[in-house]
Length: 253
Image: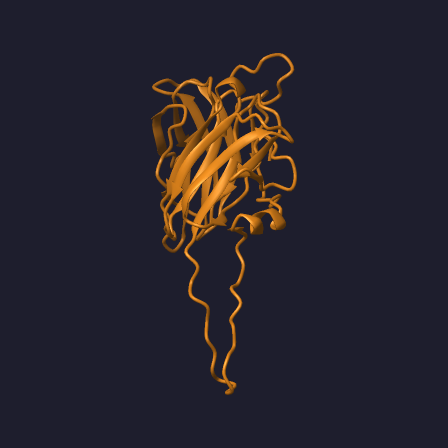
């Protein structure tokens, strides 16, 4: 659904996997799959299950509004099978825990916009965002709190990814309008909030004012599911840049 406010759009996307299985296997980055069970012995009712493989869970997002398409490298191996475009979201991938070198580079290029060494812990969940304008691109790392929403509820957090927008307040509209975030600065984020499942319209306002910067309408939050609402793009895009201030809903789990 695209809002009617000029230059301010709300986009709801479905997770798309553009990561190469062959590349992931080479560097132990595995897509979610059902583990195979190895059967041994002479009796039909005997089997030996493999030992659980330690895992961390990591998602990637391209949030740099004036940067080109990207490659993501893990230990100098490109892990995406297609160009990682602006506003692309990977969903969670499974990564062997430990210290890892992660780079964001232009497609088929060696120079890195981001070159970071990160340590991922067993059974922890992380969201990685390439943010800021191209010349100052940086990595925002959030350790996610995994929690199943209560019956009748959905989870929602809000993340401010617009490098030139002011601090924002976020609230739902209508007779039962509720404040969800106040004075949220660039790279700021809320914890996952529990909301009644259903359809919402949210507004982002310049913090402490009534100046509406963005309206995100028809946000559908399903029971038992958890989402991130990303406030991204440029409040004042330069000529030729169409990545204006917008809101994007992605499903975490």
